[in-house]
Image: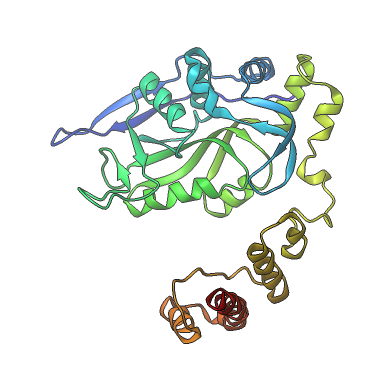
Length: 320
């Protein structure tokens, strides 16, 4: 039986005061024996499955890949008791991390961080995906002091990119980030990528543990579990995505089809849509946006090819 074990510790954390209030020291001890054994992981996995947060079938992902499993943890906001259980599990599994604040990765993890904040009386911050163009124009919302330690909360990780997109602005704001806690680790490189960035990942469960738990509780069959290929089982020669050339077969629009052909021929996805009427204006625009030297070796050819294609269409349109 797969399990995750975590040992309870007492830690002192500085409470971040509001306004001119002085930060006071307080200690926090885990509310319950912080041991998430296999049985508790099984129960949480079953609850997630039963509310539809874990689905099995055929699902087309954003990347275009067809996956036999789909994880949608957004649905958990409709189940307060489950949300509380998730908050407890995230708190327990990150018991060894030292932090003063919480920050959830937008958007699915925000309810998780909020539940943890309320249950443990831990201050929380929010990261905007884009800074406001008015008011304070902040990217990090909340009250904090420079140098405070922040625990990043995420719902699931694949490569870890979304976590880094939250860590960077936190660090830029003067906060210290060394730990990340996540409900589900898909085991597709996030742990290693985060470690390379001096971040320790604490996960309640991995995709392998999730599958084992659902099998042991008779929620899925052996075949359903085996259909979900683990990263180490994948054929290294199997491409994860279609090439631009192969994508043309799925595109009916002639403009889109031709653009994909050009991208395949030039081996570049450098592409621009510009409201200009001459070739020189288009190339001047490319110069203005400061194309990198590496891109320039392919860029002008790609721009010229695309322009000639559109120039031909413009000529035909004008003639008609």
